[in-house]
Length: 321
Ligand code: UDP
Ligand code: MG
Image (tube, rainbow, N blue to C red; front, side, top):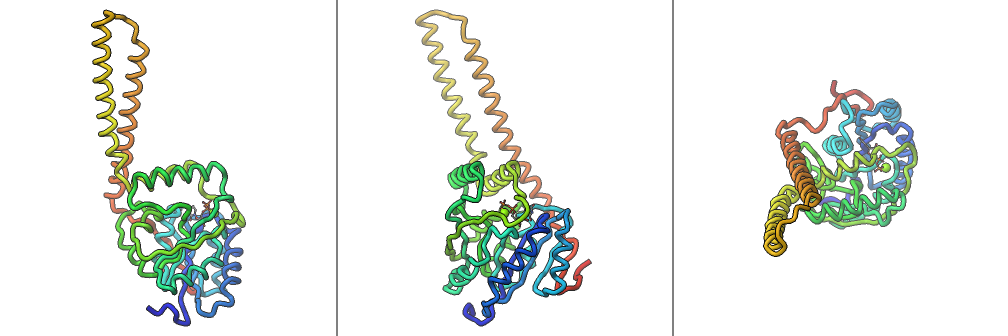
C-alpha cells in the first residue's frame, strides 16, 4: 500500500442535473481547498444527468483550461443513483469521493478523510452531526425511514450518512461487481463492507440552485431502499393473515356464546361492513407489496444497462461518439 506516496490521485465524482449556476462555484472552492496540498492530484468526473439547462456548456467551457475535468454526458436523466454509478466507473483515482455539486458536502472535509485513509481505512464516511439545513418534514421522514429500514433490512444503514464518502479504488471496483440494475447506492455502499471510519461534519445550505428531490421522489427512493435490501414486507403478510384469521375465529366463538346466552340479535351490520373493508384493504395492500417486488424482479430480469452515455469529454477533446 503506497498511501503516503507523494502523489495520490483523488477522483471527485459529481452527478449534475440542471446545476449550471453551481459548477464554477464548486470547482473554484475545490481548487482553493487543494491549492496547498502537493500530495493530492485531482480528477473531476462530472456526470451530466440529462440536464436541460446550460450545465453541459458550462462544463465544457470550464474544461477548456482545466485538463483535470472529465465529463460523462448521459443520454437522458437517469437519476442520481445511476449517474453516480456512471461516474464511479469512469473514475481512475487511487481514492474516489462522490460529492454533490451544491457544496453541501464540504470539500475541506476530504483532507480529513484522506488522513484516515492513510491510516489504513478503505472507506471514510462523512456523517452529518445535524440536519438543520433540512426542513422539519425532511428530517422527520428521514428519521422514520432509517428506523423502519434498519428494522427490516440487511445490512443496516448507518444514520445521517449520505453518498459523501471517500473510497479506496478497490472498494469502487468491488461495487462494480454488483450486478443489480436498480442501484440504491447507500445500501450497496454498506453491503460491500471494508474497513470503515467516520468523520463528522455540519451540512451547510445549498450555494445555488434548488434541491432536485421532492417528497414523492424521496418516498420512491425509500421504497427502493427497503425493497432492495429486505424481503420482510413480503413475509409480513403471512403473519398478518394468520393473526387476522385467528382473531376472526375467536370472534366467531364469542358470537356463538352470545347467541347461546342471549339468543339471536340482528344488529351487527356496522361491525360486518367494517370487517369487510378492513380485510379488503389488507388484501389490497398485500397484493400491492407483492406487485412492488414483482415489478422490481421484472425490471431486473430485463438486464438493461443502468445508464447510457452519449459522449465522454476528456482532456479537452471528444472521446467516444
Ligand atoms: N442529481 C442528479 N440527478 C438527479 C437529481 C440530482 O445528478 O436526478 C444531483 C444534483 O445535481 C446534485 C446531487 O445530485 O449534485 C444532489 O442533489 P440535491 O442537492 O438536489 O439533493 P439534496 O441535497 O436536496 O438532497
Ligand atoms: Mg443538495
